[in-house]
Image 1 (tube, rainbow, N blue to C red):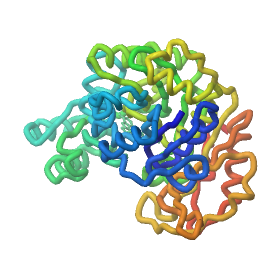
Image 2 (image 1 turned 90 degrees about the horizontal axis):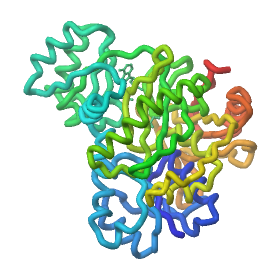
Image 3 (image 1 turned 90 degrees about the vertical axis):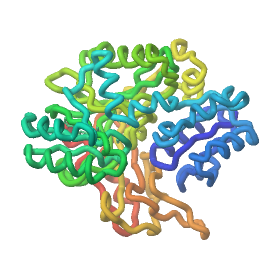
Length: 425
Ligand code: AMP
Ligand code: GLY
């Protein structure tokens, strides 16, 4: 069958890698894709947000499965567009509708949702311009640190952890009055700080049934020892050593089950991935956030551990048959190390030639921000450039392969964290 995958990052290269491993995949189209996806699939240089154009492309190319990587098309209603068309609605579509995507698109919506279904999450209140004075009073006396979150999508930048009440007042005003994060921060969620270790749990649902995919931990800060600015993610490991059966049982009972049944009760057509960002607080899971998609770089360690046919898995989810699917997961550990551009997550240059791919062995190189030039060179084209994924019997063994191969790849301004998985090795 022909499949359309939406997106262009390391996550999408990992999806492309898994989808094309299946015998069922004839043609895989990636819209728009990157230099890595073009090695295994056909890149389609169209804008995925032009839904009419995507719909026409699907009909013209007999697409029989659609998988959406990033959140933006979902938050903007891509599924709703397809479901409203008599022809397009027949194509199994992996990604929730606009309302479901609000789990990620609006922090206020997701906090409300968690409260309605008694899902453990930090205590919170929401403020806008209308009640900013109440908000100021609230943060003046809030316990510290206090967390301020822009309600809307803010490219991963909309969360501030304030160490003093004065700082929180100033930031609340900057967010609401001065639109520090644009329209996304005209509404702000103020919540209590949770002290613990973070991890991500991924759930695939067909709207009724669900499968819990391998958990992962990503490394968000740019600097070693978890220092410096937040990034999209500098590396990841799966499984997460402390997410044992006892912990995962708590996650399933207290969080996954009420989340899926809550979505059903709300009448939300949620077919796709639920990414649950969790804090492990003394052995108990608390939800920090939901995302309506897979994580990046978590996908680069979660998908390689899935042994079942990945197209079958997507089809089972897309057709409401996940309960009949036998999900097989590898016991091996997967690690990924992200190679980034010098300057990231601030300004960085693009267009540097990348060499050394042929020297890599025993790792998979997923492309994130790369492109192929007219003269067929692979060049850097983003802050996060390549994700080097390796498998092994332990984090230590896997990550040693990722580090060795990180050295074999060259481009100007290459940087990576040499301590991915450090607290477990
Ligand atoms: P988010 O965009 O909601 O994932 O938040 C970004 C990061 O801020 C998270 O990955 C956490 O590291 C941190 N964070 C968010 N909310 C909290 C909280 N309530 N307590 C502690 N840390 C938090
Ligand atoms: N790595 C975190 C995310 O994808 O949001």
